[in-house]
Amino acid sequence: MCSVLFCDLVGFTPLSEARDAEEVRELLSCYFEKARTVIGRYGGVVEKFIGDAVMAVWGTPQAFEEDGERAVRAALELIDAVAQLGREAGVEGLQARAGVVTGPVAVTVGARGEGMVAGDAVNTAARVQAVADPGVVFVDEGTLRVAEAAISFFPAGEYALKGKAQPVPLWRATRVVGGAGGSQRIDGLEAGFVGRDAEMRLVKELFHACEQRSSPRLVSVTGPAGVGKSRLGWEFRKYIDGLLVTVWWHQGRCLSYGDGVAFWALAEMVRQRFQIADEDPTRVAAEKLATGLEQWLDDPAEREYVGPRLGQLLGVEYGDAAAVLGREELFAGWRLFFERLAATGPVVMVIEDLQHADAGLLDFVEHLLDWARDVPIFVLTLARPDLTNRRAGGGTGHRNGTTLTLDALDGAAMSTLLDGLVPGMPTGAKVAIAGRAEGIPLYAVETVRMLIDHDTVQPIDGVYRLVGDVGGLAVPPTLQSLLAARLDALDADERRLVADAAVLGGTFPADALAAISDQPEPEVRRLLAELVRREVLGVRADPLSPQRGQYAFVQTMFRQVAYD
Image (cartoon, rainbow, N blue to C red; front, side, top):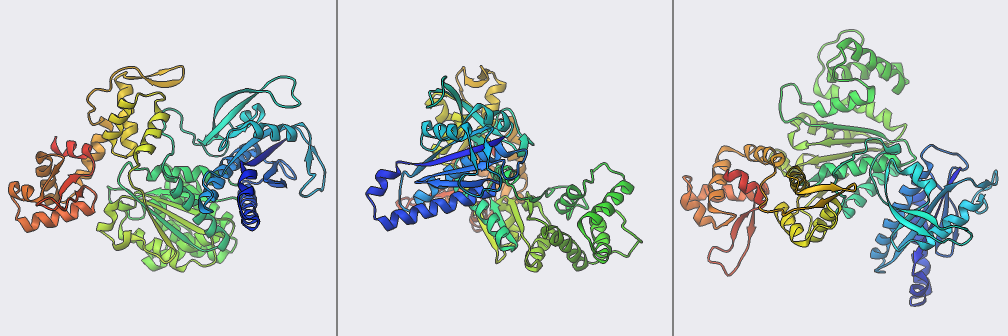
C-alpha cells in the first residue's frame, strides 16, 4: 500500500511562452529543488518530474504508519511553497494543484527514481490532480481514511475520471489540525490559522537552517495577549510532528506566581523528557531520572556529572548526596544534557510566557546558545511586550537570534477567521465583531463563544450559524480576567492614569488627561510614553491638531475593563 502525490504548476505553459528561456529554466529549477526539499522532509521519494509536474511516492522502499498523512502534509506545504516562489520571482499568480491517492501499487524492487511504482493508484493520482482547482489539494477515499485524524477535509463532490467506470468521490484537504496520527487534536470551536503565513514560513525555515547547520538558533516571538503567539507555537508543533526526522520536542511555561519557580519552564521540559509526572513521589522521580540518564548518556562519567545537576533542578537526589551547586555548575550540566540529546536529533525548546521568566532562566537560555557548539538546538520563546520592561532586547538578545513581532490581524484576515468560525455570517455582524476584536484573534473567538452561550450562534448540521442579532457586544467573561490581569500588572501610578484615561473616553489629548490627573504634568507625559511602549495606549498623530494628535486605547475592550 503506497500513497502517490502528483503536483502540477497551473498555467505554466502560457507563462513560459511570454518569458525568456533562461528565466523559465531558472524558475523550474527552483520549483524542482523546493519540491525535493519539501517531499524529502516528509519522508517521500521523488519518482520523476514530468514537464512542470512532480510525482512522489510514500511507502517504498520503506513503509511508515503515517505515509498517507505525510503525503497530504507535503502536498499542502508544496502548494504554499509554489505560491511563495511566484511572489519571490515576480511571477504573481503562480500556483500549483495536487492530488494524493492511496492504494496498492506494483513496486520494482531496487529501482531508484523513475519506474519505482506503477498501477491504478499512480494513474488515478495524476487524474485527481488534473481536476483540482489552482491552489487546492484533492485526495481519494483511501487517503481520507488514513489521514483524516490529523488533516481537515471537506467533501469536494464526485468527478468523472478517465479510466473509471463510475464517478469518483474526492475530498479537499484544507489544513493540519493535529499531530501525527491525530495526536493532540483540538475539536470544537477553533479559529483558522490566518494572517500568519509569512511568520510561520520563517519559523520553519529557521528551524531547518538550525538542523542542517547543526547550529543553535533562537526565535523570539512577541505580541500582546491573544494575538496568536501560542497558536503559532501549536502550528509549529503540528508541523514538526509530521516530519520524518525525529525531533526531541520540549515545552515549558513560565509561571507568574509562587515561590521556588525560577526554572519552572526548564524543569517542566526535563520532566517531560524523563516522563516524570508532577504527582510522582520523590523516590519514583529519582528512579526515572537515573533510568533516563542511562538511556540518553552513554558515558558513565557524564551521567555522574549531569545527574546531580538535573536532580537539583527537579528537587530529587541522584547518587550520593552532594553539596548545593552554584549556578555556573548547574548551567554546564544542563547544557551538556541537551547537547548530548541534540547529537541524536534536533532539539526544540519552546518557552511560553517568557515575560514571567526570572533572570536566571533568561541567563541559562543565553548560556545555552553561547556555549553549545555543532548541535541543532532550536529555542522558540513566546512573550508579551512586557518582557522588555525587565530585560533590554527582550531578555534573549543573541547573535543567532531572530525576533518576530505579531501585530493585530488586518480586516481581510479577521473576515476570513470569522467565516471559518461561523460560515455565512452577514457582513454587518462580521464588521461588528471584528471591530470589537480590533485584530486580536482571541477576542473574536471569545466573542463568538459568548454568542454561542447566548444561543445567538447555534450548531446546525454540524456547522455554527448565526440565528439572531449580535446586538451590543459586551466584554466576554472569559476575557475580563485576562484584561484585568494586564491592568493589574501595571505600576500603581500607571493604573491610576489608565483609570483616568478610561473616564475621558477611547481617545483623548494629553493636556486633558494632565488636567484631571492628580499627578504632575511631566510625570503624566512620562507615564503616557511608558503606556505607549507597553502597547496599552497608541498615538493617533494629526499634524494639524493643536495637540499634535491624541492618545487612544489600543484595545477598546481594555478601556471598558479599566472603566468598569
